[in-house]
Length: 343
Image: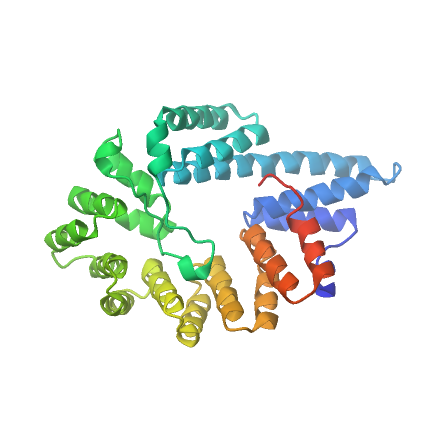
């Protein structure tokens, strides 16, 4: 893992410059880590020329990164709440409040916290989510399993919470699909797939064909008809090659079926097209692991350490390194990326 160590300069000015690049690219966690590394080095500089001014820059930019991270944690809390996970949402909200003194952000965090606490305990216990901790159990979307009749909010408001987790460009399209589609989507989120399929067919009039195919594919996949699901995903991609959900749905279906070569080809096509950049690379590395190609998996996970997916990549990289008997390299990854940071 010597190549990883070379990524990190020991010069404070270089660390600040690296943090500035991360900040400009909206990689706030990595930016904060770079500024904190620079601050530690400057703290031991014994009053070197220019150190005080650079230290002030570090403090100011750590504050900027923390402010951005607070906003991201509030977004994560909204997503967790939409998935029926109020306890997880509260964790993100507490972290957000610890990161910033901004009155607007803190007020929003308090409002969401009140909403979390308003959910009754029984609903919290019964809510479950289709996880994505390993590629064999991934699903293109995470759906709340509780019936909408148990949710105390208007249909369209609840629907908006559900689709917040979609890629931004798809969120914009889903927002304009109307109340009938929203009702279908919410029904599907409660695992009433037969009812959802009937409502989807009733909604479809010929427009947004790629979304219709994707949603039909998702429902069929959950009903166990993998062949029809695959046909739907592929038709969605042919209709609109920019539909990231259809691409992801196909990739995960292929992984689920242990069709690893085809899954690898699909993910590489997504990577080449810039579709779900970090997620497609992460899944490609996962497929390498499943195929027994740990060297390529290590290379791909390592390449994700300078992206917003750094922590997840580090966790998976650590596991692969341990499986390969490279405990020292795994320990380095733990110290650098998994050393108890709250984010």
